[in-house]
Length: 251
Image (cartoon, rainbow, N blue to C red):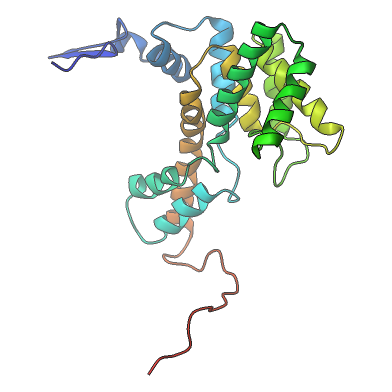
């Protein structure tokens, strides 16, 4: 038997996590319903505000990321809106949008070590960076190819502190940034900020991409609609010089 504790469906009756959906509609904001779906309970006011902020921080980043490229290129071929948006979502992976999950996994692992060994955040940051260096890995969620200081990070951290959500994971990320600055400035980007905050809120790292997808899906819809209503089909996009490196013409 297929079992689920998320939603019950009966004729003329829909119950999600114990709430009738008609009671949720118009009464509970979308971000809070998302929290309900994942955690099985309603968020308190502070949690609701933080979740809404996290989703909003990922809504769009112009035409710079691969997901937007993919969505608009596919949209230019004249496909339906869901197809083009899905193309953008399919571009989300470990490199684009995946830093949240990977960063949260590392932060949660090392906060656990910090508590076990009674280290300070500064000691933990040094230990973590030494470990990453020895294993030839990078710390996800730091640095940005466009921003020197990601404006979304400062806002999210300010809000997390104001709402009393800021904890060990945010503090460890700040200690890491301080440790990085001794050699080269490497600020926390929005992915790293989301990773630290959802970790302080007790979310599973595997849900990292979910926060990105919820926000970015709205941006992709906007880009696809703009592409199909203001641009010619199959217009020239992403032009660049191409050098052929294959074999010479064969007999």
